[in-house]
Length: 285
Length: 298
Image 1 (cartoon, rainbow over the protein chains, first blue to last red):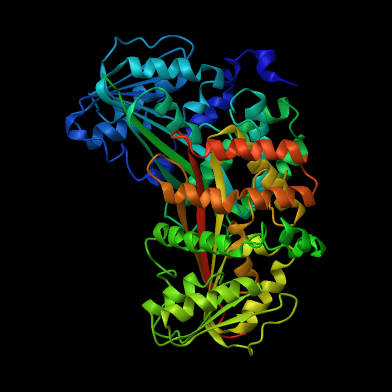
Image 2 (cartoon, each protein chain N blue to C red; image 1 turned 180 degrees about the vertical axis):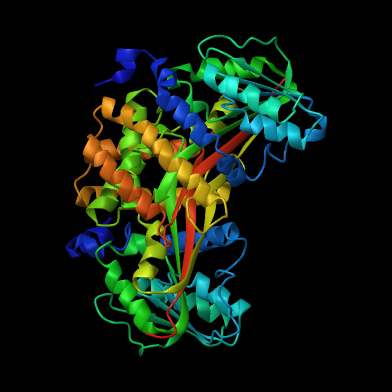
């Protein structure tokens, strides 16, 4: 069954699954794993305006203005709920040089050309379907100043020592693929992270490069891993209705796998990882 | 592919992925030496986990030593220890001996062993055992025996270090398809841990658990992401092309496991080799180094 055909290419970002995915990929642990807010190639002293596309609840945007108060960040997301929460959280932190807007992924960005020094996108794959890739990339480059940097970061599953989790990951990826969220022709991956670099090369950007980072799932690896795994497991629970709806597994199997995965991921000898790929390119005159 | 055809009698569970191809073992040796350089670069030049104290280490084994790159580097950097390079492959060990003879190293010996028998060392002989590429050599079913043997050979309090590479996502479509073939091959030869057998994952993440099953202590691991693409990364690209998706290896095993039609696969492998030369190519993998210590008291 081809869900993409049945539901149209915009279906993936309209599912609750896409919101869950965005929160997961935008988790503070991911930023920690990346080891930086912006790639060191970008000279932040010269950056004044930043656009954060798919900002979720504004976690990254808040961190950036806290660390570099001279930067103004604009965060946009397709979810009205996230924009509301992002605005509230920024106000609670008393942050002024930050603003959030809702946008429709299918529409042009509501900014004039050459507005931003940096455009940052984390986990674009989680909120747009693959059919929309070239259009959104064009838009991102349009709003970037000449010589400004585009930074795209995305996530890809790796492997873990938990067989139950590995099975759940295969089931989840089948769902992502069915919804048009995967661009890998054959392998059980989302396929976006490894393509970011090529997208920027093909778009004719300058100084294109990328770095690879590990997201460590080991409970003893960092003090924050346990909190990440807690959120990770509850995110899987919110994925459940979506997995059942598309008959990727049955209720009982899902519950059994999840409780096994939880036990295995929390075992002292547990081991696992995922990938983050961060690609950058500079806009050519 | 004459040499490869002679190996057709070897049961699949004993296939050595390093020793498949046109009989030119030297080319594979170069690829393995190259792999050592790449891994060492990714691990910031550390030959063993910093957690392992070297002051008490006297006797060392490099199990599955390949052309001897790791044990030769170890001997140079930490002289005075007795080091054994051990492998199951005659041709590879012959090459390792030749390499070491040129380097004029003291207290380094190479041995060929039969993987179906216990290794020719007494119990509790080693302070430290280094085992690299074990997950692509041994089947999941063979691992409990391998771990029991490593445990037998280690002194109480001795350290084991397992180092394995796993392929991750890549950008180009033909390579993506080749990787699913590789995954199916690995599943047929008992070296794939995935539920659907479609990702080429050999079980590097099982290292810490395998040590826990032997009641090891001080278990830990470190991750090193490996870049295999990019316009400015010939080292990573060459490792991918010469070792991970070496066309002779994939072709031979795909025929033996009957996972793909000959013509279709040949065309696909040619397309993949073209893709690997493109500027916009990106591919990544993960090097996982896990370590643990045999308990001081049984």
